[in-house]
Image 1 (spheres, rainbow, N blue to C red):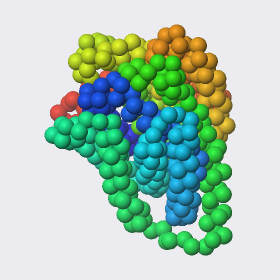
Image 2 (tube, one colour):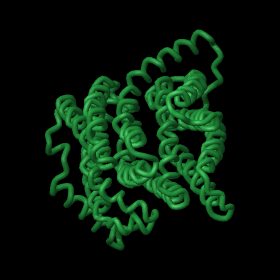
Image 3 (spheres, rainbow, N blue to C red):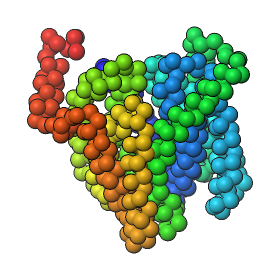
Image 4 (cartoon, one colour):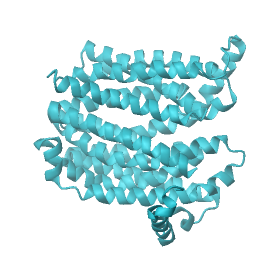
Length: 429
């Protein structure tokens, strides 16, 4: 388990590094206002992809171990076509965006959703190397395309980001299809069986994915509030602070994703849960260390790296830091309830967070601007995670000592590092 987590974490670190390059490129070459427009487009795409996940989200990982993957892929692809088209049109009606924006939004959403479906299917079959490789390739292509366009080509406009996404998701999509075809599943054609699996997929996806939609609202409703009450420049500064802070989540997300795959494939769910508790505590310890390091970064460094407009992102990071740590801890509990198909707990936790997010956006953003949005996010995370932990302890019988890191975990890490540094053990670790 630890080895798989480390491999996955290494891939996520590389992906996060490339994502940082994307944030830096869009901030440095497009400015705060351009970065704000890019952030709003990314948020729109993510929102539509989440609704696409109502039939074919992460529940594919849960269902694919015992089912024909082609029976799952077809309804997921079809639903993606419907939502990407209708969703993009609704965005065009709700906000003053042009026809070109609507077209790019629909197309990028569709390609990204199909790619997401394929990678979930591969991960559900425990093809973790393929999953990590595809995710890394996607981010590498996006960063590389933007670097070439903004640098040698000197094409420094927001639409460049749209075109870069076609390449970044289109090529990995084709590769992922080729990898799926190599799996032993036969192309299923029985219509009755297709309908039964499609209904099962929709039922599981609605339960499993509803909390993701609510969580997304907690994460990004502040973006829309800032865009409405302030402007694109303020949103650009907020997005840089949020991107840096949320990059820390690659630590708990790496652990949680591997634990989720192991949990859904385990015969004894309770035994698998207890086996992962030390990993969860060490994950929380690493997350806390990363939060402290990021909070110590001076505003002058941020301005030097991203541009003079982005020094204000430091205050955003400070306001987000408590929520980033708290939500990182909650990912472990959320993973457990998803793995045992108790989606209602995650849904109620996310709904509780949303009940905090909405008034926070309406009350804090008009008064405090981007800092109000960041404070609202932290408050929402605290409310959701508090509810999750209460139910997680009841479900697993774990004590606070089982969940929270202590000196014993610190000593374990130090001893492990000592063992790795010894010449006679380097070859065996």
